[in-house]
Structures are given as structure tokens and as C-alpha cells.
Image (cartoon, rainbow, N blue to C red; front, side):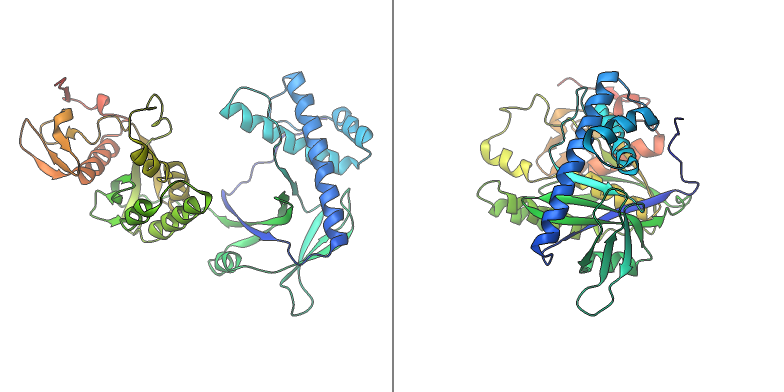
Length: 368
């Protein structure tokens, strides 16, 4: 019998918080590491099997397929079923990004309530005790410390899920706690606001808000791109987005910058390219979408084409309109800050309900 995934009646928001198992003894570390390698091999086997069959559906695998994995690796039916489900999710996610068979680069596995329980630790040294209760996983108890991130989520009415993600990163075992909260109702009243973002002026909103401008000096001080510099920029972006006032906003319109670097090789100088590489727009958009989700705000992505050169007063755009941070329309003389003008144009797209400026009525293209 083939069962479909159960859909939740009430939309749930989910977040994760990572805890490294630095205090685990050597024996337990070795046991969990061997279990992770086994789960990795079984999941890759199912990925190869489903890809060979061209089975990209969301349906759970049938018992015959599950038993193949069970007999091949000597695991329980429950564990084989869980890993087959994860393999399906990996394939479906990979198909959306690129049309080729996924290869599992990392050793991670999701463990449901069939395999673990999360209980308060009986003592003062740790906060939680994760008990592996079998069904294919080794029977042992892992003590875990809580973190500031977990405590902050719990104080904001989030709850710990019964599911965790066990993984291995650079030889260090970790557990991702999953936290859940009911999805807030989308706002029906408020303003439609546009937001323009860049590494120099941060986040500029059409309602007058501006946050993250201090990041520019940080980016200018970096001699070249390194891992710690990206980590610092992510921290600054997170701190900046916390300053946004969502109280009077129902929709935020941002630029869809997914393919912004396409065919741009050799366009900018090395210094400018380095600074652009530190503006993590994909990370920013993802983090902003989470903030909007938590505040009941709709996030819409718009076509960025000519948003910084378009004059909403006379309805014309021209490449000569923008010079650095200044916007001066060569046709009607309207002037504004270039980022504020772009944010206002994104707001206009949201108000009219179109994707790009080409769809606006009475807009003209000037080829000069």
C-alpha cells in the first residue's frame, strides 16, 4: 500500500537551532558516527533507486522497495521507511534546483519520534536528555546543553518538536533542534512598502525606514573575502533586520535578484566585485522572508529591471537619470535619493499588482 504524506490542518512555522555535542564521551561519539554513516549509505541507495525508476512523486515508497533497503543493509523496516522518505524529499528538492541526480555531500539524518525522545535532564549539569529508543537507532542517552537561541525561541512561545536532525560537520557531531509555532494570520490592513537593498546604504524602505547602513564601513575594511568576513556580515544583516518596524506594514516588495550576476563577468573592478560578494542578497531575502512570516507580512519579489532609473512622476526611464546616490529625471526634473526612488518604484509595483515596470500602463522607454 502506498500512503501519501499527511498535510497539517494548521500551517506551522519551523525553525532550527544547532547544538554541537562537545561533551559526549568517545564511545557514544563513535556509535552515533557509525549510525550516521549507515544512514548516509542507505539514503544514497534509495536516491539511486528512485532516480533509476524516475520516481519523483511525493508518495511514500511501497513495502517491496523498503524491504529491499532493509535486507541489503540489515536495518529495521522502520528505519528503512524513514530513510526512503528522506530520499524522496532530497530528489524532489534537487529536481527543482537542477535536473540531475543528487549526491549526498553531508552526513545528516532526520530522526522522528519513533527513534528518539526529548526529556528534561535529571540533574543540573545539562538541560535536555535525548534518548535514542531503538527502531534501528542505538539505545543510548545524549545529554545536551541549551543555547541562547533555543531559550529565545522558547520565550517567544515556540515549542520543541519531537523531531531532531543529527549530523556531522568537520568531525564534530551536532543536533539540530526543530522548533514550531502556529503561523500568524496574514495582515489585511497596513501599507504596501518597497525595499531597496545594497551593500552601501543597507535597507531603504519607501516608508522612510533605513537600517543596516553601518555595514558599508565593515565591508570596506575587509581586504578580501574570507569565511569569517561572511560570518560577520551575516551577523550584521541579522541585527539590521531586527530593527525593522513591521507594525504598519502588510506587504513588502523587494527585487528578485536570483540571476543578478548572470552575464556580468568582467563588468566590475576587482575591488567592487569583492564588496558585492559580501552583500549576501540570497541570505538577506531568506532571512527577511522569515521575519515577514513571523509578523504576518506578505513578501513579494519584483523584477529589478530599471527600478533605479524609472521616474514615477512622468512615467519614463532613462539611464541618465541616476548618478551614484542621486536620482534626477532628465525629462521632468524630479529628484530624490536613488535608493529611496527605487524603493518607491517597488512600492508602486506592489500597489498596481504587477511584476515589472514593463507591465505598468502609460510607461515609456527612452533609449538614450
